[in-house]
Image 1 (cartoon, one colour):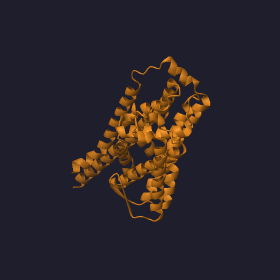
Image 2: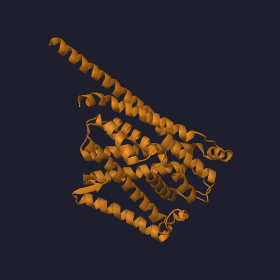
Image 3: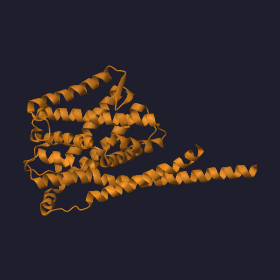
Image 4: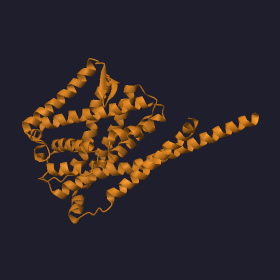
Length: 337
């Protein structure tokens, strides 16, 4: 047992460095063999500079909102001693890695536990934190998706060969949108009337307070609208179906990508989006999707690698210093004997 405790401090940094190597491999695989044809290059050049700026701003909004997810969950847990800077770094690293690796709940839990354990949180607390963050995301999908389907029930009409007919029928989509909004209303009602327990992903958590729920309903739509905005701002004007349709398709395609557990949703995400916009130039839509993948997935992954390297280097240095200190104390004790 003492051997395990002594070497556990080295295990986590080693695991972190392995994650960095895997991330480098993923970046290499993402770009290996990529060649931009003349049409695609022209599509990138056709995006106005201010649209690139807006897409970048939408990315910042999305990742700030994701950090807000963690902050909301920590408020629910009653944890207030962790700085916003650490929360933002931990959240950013979590989502940058889990979005690219796949299996977001599992990989996100591992990254969060590694980070928040250094701040005194236990496994049970991190499990609740992950559940609250996942619940916040689902609430955002229900709220934004429900509103989008109510306002534009024809949003998914182009996906008839990918989805069951009832999902693409405008009348059915209208009903589904209403059901999504009703689910959100029931959740808010549960918080208002202080229902006792909520089970999410097999984790039992006390029902969030109304103040927590209000924050969830602010943060989650901001993240989804920000992420969808990256694609919307990069799409060509010709054949652009409008922001609400882009949002509805984004929720559908991003959910399908998450469910597939494919790294970064590669292939799944693009397929759904390309099918949903037959009126837009193919190269223009593909350029928008590649810009989204660059801003929302690959650049954050590269930054996350640097954050993990810095974090694990500090943890390893502290572990070595701690073991040297312990060895010195034992040596002194042996001399006294």
